[in-house]
Image 1: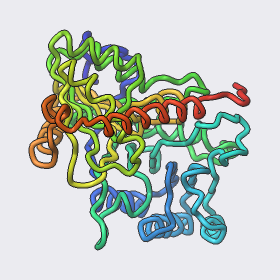
Image 2: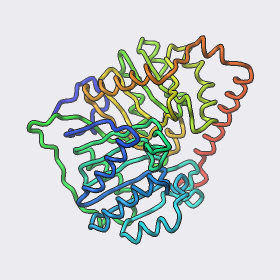
Image 3: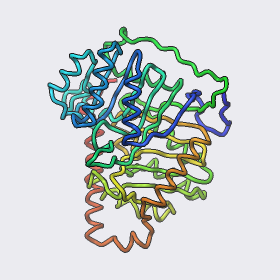
Length: 390
């Protein structure tokens, strides 16, 4: 096994994998997803925040139905709020094919009544060997169609031991079915294979899981030269901002790609209210222009990458159930940084201090501050305990 350098923090949890690669939303992601489902032999676990009954959703559902009918055990869990558009007929068709289907926490019927706790992660695991984790939901917004270019987002594809660990995470969400799980033993054979080290990371405040937050804090503490972030709703809380400021102060060059076109107008106004704080500390802000940005990714020093569902804001930190994968591999990290630099060069506009000041009218400032305050109120509601049981 490739040894981890002593400078890499929190070394526990990394496992070797034969292949890890970044997969972009659109044809690349959904063609691979369908291929994995088609080639599954034993089990499929698919868990997602949004599952739309549109063209893309029907395509994935039909692939799952075919897999189930040929004897593959299929487990599908979707969020009870974000996927409420699924009809009874759509769900019944899945269940009649033998698919285990469940909503995660109907909005006001959760056993653990924690208003903002949503199943926000997006993961697919096939046969305990292949997996994809990222920010890509199941729906036309995230796919390339004749009428639509996919929103900018990514997942990480894994062939290796981490997939088995991800399967166990998925199994823990499938309550009452553990005795039916098929056991998988998967070890990466080292002979002649490149080894990429990776680990799954969970955030679930109710369950006292703060691993993804810890990964980002480690990145800000350990970075020596550069940090690249791409975040769809970039509103880091006090703790993350403190570490961002400390990294910038010691000379780390920080570039953040944020949405120029957002699907949540309130979040975009609130985000722009924070631009001044980051610019005063030397953080570069780049707004993506081509399409809606939905990606969540961080990398530093050409060594390490985290990819998943975790947004850099307090809703992900303190409310939603999130899942990322950390990857330690210089070749992988270098290629990810180059992709981000290419996006910055071709598809972004830099928000310089001069441009920010020029556009910051009193009316804009009022809208941004109002949105920021509203966002804080929403956060309070989303993280308020009406009833908590551990």
